[in-house]
Image (cartoon, rainbow, N blue to C red; front, side):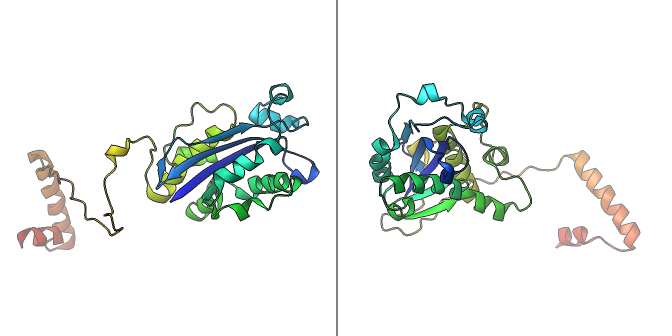
Length: 236
């Protein structure tokens, strides 16, 4: 299964008022494994970023001046995501901008080129109702380090979201395992393979712990004027 984790940075919040995409970052997962086949482009939006947006991403007009325009990278982006499941945090925001950019080039809407969209913000709200579900909050919740993230960046945020997504869906919190370390869970024909159980480690109670346990049972026996169930179970 091919999945693409995607993020964008923009000049502002509203494509309907002329805000543009200035960065696209995508991370590829094949069968839930990071491939390293990423897509990352800075884009000249031909306009300045709003002050609030600039404070978030730090991509100045001067930095973007010599970068390609969206028209120059659109076909490459479309081909890269073609047929994949695309994972986005707060998908309506990114899709609104991508659709606006595609419409300027007479391309069909972004979603028509892919298999489907997975919105991790909606997933997180279902899984953690009433809690903060920003990307930073999810990184904290799933143990994903974002200490190196001082400003928002599309590729960095896509990498973080990929790891968060794996944590949300399977509890697999690291993308960095070597391929050789992954256990085989399916056979060649796709059927399930039973994996050996890990060794069970039994730790015996110390004499002090046993004495403390028996003292507690004596207290329970006295309070209930009988024999505690744990003693009856131990005797069988």
